Image (cartoon, rainbow, N blue to C red; front, side, top):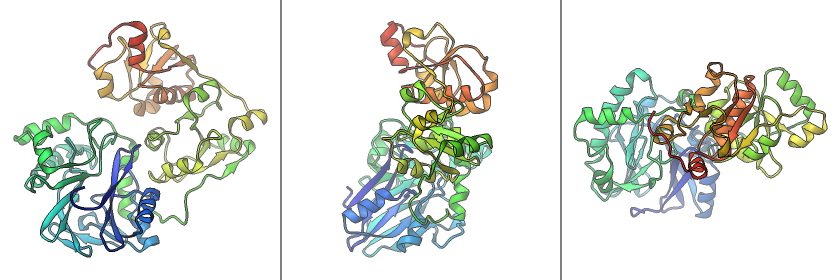
Length: 453
C-alpha cells in the first residue's frame, strides 16, 4: 500500500481508521489511534513490532486518543501539533517540521479547517513522498466538517479547509491518502466509500475538489453538515488536557438486583444492550435500549448524560469487555457495573418488567408514525405523513410529542427501539416499533416513499 507496510485499524462503529506503519527496524508508528488499543496491540504483536511513535493529526472530538496511554505503557513518543497546547509530554510540531522515524521521515503540514491546529503528516522515504495522513482534512470523496470548534466559526473554518485541501492537491498524484474519518463517521464522510485513496484519484473524483470557487466549496461543505453527538463538544478538551492513563482494561463489576434497584432510586440510568427483540419482549421499566453493535458507543454518548451512574443489562452471550471499551473510548467513566444474571435475575428477585410492541409494516398507518433517522435519511425517502425527529434530539424534546399511540421507525429497528425506550422513560405509553425500515414497508405495501424534508 503506497510502498510502505501500513495496516489500517478500522473502528466500524465510529467510522474511523487509525494506521500502524512498520518502520522496518522492529518499531512502528501509529496515527490517530483511540484509547481502545486492542487492535493496535494485536497488529504490533503479530508483526513483532514495538509501538515507538504515536501521532495525532488533531484534537479528536469523536474518540479519546490512545497516544498518552501508549506513552505511559509503551514509552511511545507522542507527535502532535504545538498549536494544540496539550498538557502532557509530547513533541510539538509546526508546519514543515520533520521527525526522523529511523529511515522514514514524517513531515508536518498545517491543514486547518476541521480544527484550528490540524496537521496532516506526510510520510517520506528519503525525498520520495509515500502517503499523507490527512486526518480530518481531505477525506475520500469529501472533507471533514468545520462546525465542531464553534458554530459561529463554521464558515471561517470551511474557508480554511478549502485552502488546506488545495495545498494537499499540490502533492504528486501517486501519493496515498490515508484519512482518519471514513464512512459512518459523524465527522462527515459519504457512505460506502473506500477508506484510502490517492491524491490523483481525489482530484478526479472528489466533488469538493472539483469546485474551484471558494464560495461554492463553502456552500457545498456547510450544506452537507448533519447533526453529531453531544460528546463531540467535550472530547477535544479531554484530549488536550490528557486522557487519564488506564491501569488495566476497563471492566464491568457485577451488582445484584437489590444494589441496582437502590442505584436507580438515586438517579442512575439503566442501559439495556440486548438485541431489539429481547428488549421488546421484556425489560426493566425506564431502561434505555442501546443494542450492542458497532455503533453502540455513539448512541451511548448521544442518549445518556455523561455525568450519571450507568448500570448495564446484557445477554449472557454478550461480551462485557466490548461494552466497557466502547464507553471508555468516548470518556464515559460512570459505568458502575452490570446487573448480575441479567433480566432473569431481576425477575427472580421480584423486579417489575415492561414490554414494547414490535410490529410489522401492516401496522404502519393505523397509528401516527415517528421516523427518528438522520435528516438526510428521512429526506431520501420516508413513509408518507411520517413525523420526523432525529433520535439524538428526542431526549430533550419528548414533551413536544403528543401522548398517543405511535409507531416508531428507523432503518432496521435498533434506533427505533432506542427512541421507544426514551419515550417510555418519559411517560409515553402505547409505543410500538416497526420491525424493519422503509424498504420493508415498501415491499409489504407496494406503495412509494415520500421524498424531501
